[in-house]
Length: 296
Ligand code: NAD
Ligand code: MG
Image (cartoon, rainbow, N blue to C red):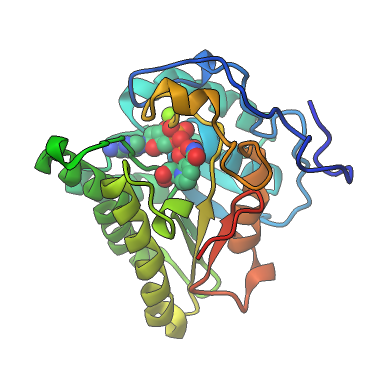
């Protein structure tokens, strides 16, 4: 396991393609990934940057959300993790790693496409944490549709509900609890700027997220609540083998300027930064973490 604090060549810090072919049904399972992603289990060290903060993290069972949960707890935050009921085993494993910090970690499974559930999730999180000051939306849905011949309203609906509607629902539910100094963090994608032809539904949601993040930041400025986003490039998570075909898995990350995918731990400090008061003058921004690829 690499030491993420040691200066080194980032191109060779983690595995480069080719990867073994692997496919999974969605929502994907961390245990079946080869190689195992690095979420910071052995490597992420906290520095008290989120001491005493109370965070709701969606998509917290696996991938980027798991790395964010580990980092936030090691930085001193209590966390509630949301994910789909099918992902209970991944969530329990994340809980185990997070609990080693001694911070509170609660699991609240449920489907973000269900409007009512979003409101219940926030209320349960507030109860579990004794308040809320960080709303961190990492959960998201992606499927490949190579041709418009295969367009369905169902996929469009599912993708926008998961990625965009839930942003509005969770924000609406959380706002009465957030105070000056609180922060909202969204998760876009390089796809929101440079769409791949087979990801129109997904890329459209990710562009919307950048736009809503900017507008919401301006609206909430007078309340002292910051709103920022993260736009990842290719990251080695279960989202990929459960949504793109094998030929793309084998060469996954080769399109990045670094020639490799990022590992979830390479993103978690960006979420920590945006959540922490260190980013006090930053709102409305989406930070691209793309392995050197230009985002425009
Ligand atoms: P992941 O599969 O580990 O995480 C996505 C999570 O979304 C799942 O674990 C699941 O819990 C959650 N989710 C999906 N549908 C849901 C629903 N209906 N209700 C509740 N939860 C639901 O993969 P990841 O790559 O860590 O994805 C996290 C975020 O990062 C997503 O928003 C994704 O779009 C974004 N992203 C990922 C990449 C990448 O290359 N992996 C690139 C850019 C952006
Ligand atoms: Mg998952």
